[in-house]
Length: 137
Image 1 (cartoon, one colour):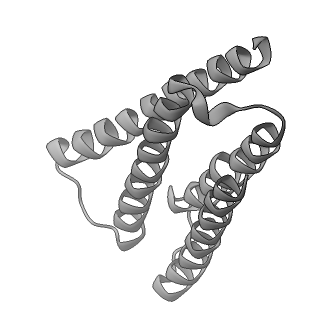
Image 2 (cartoon, one colour):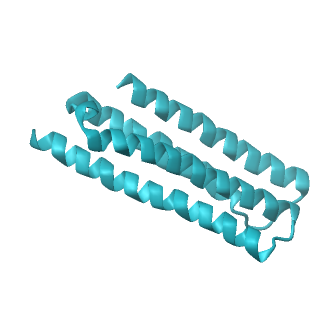
């Protein structure tokens, strides 16, 4: 349980840092429009902090760590979430500074963010499958 609470705390801190970065960076740059930066903060807080608080509660009742599906969830999800948020931070920062994006760079950022989102989706499915398996035992 402690490990998942540590993950939750880590994602919470990263989420708060993203929120401060969004607020202060846009204020310094005098940016008032809509930017992808605003989505990084809730991604870490909800998909990181809240999810791992829930996982911690389940791990207290179920023996999740013995399941290979759960181990795969941990690896995939903890790659997908930071990758997704990193691409949001990159895109949002470029939006705020008004940097022109070439077609290739725009597609690359979208593609990498898409891979991150695919990993998140696969991770969530693996988590549900591992919870289901653990409950059946």
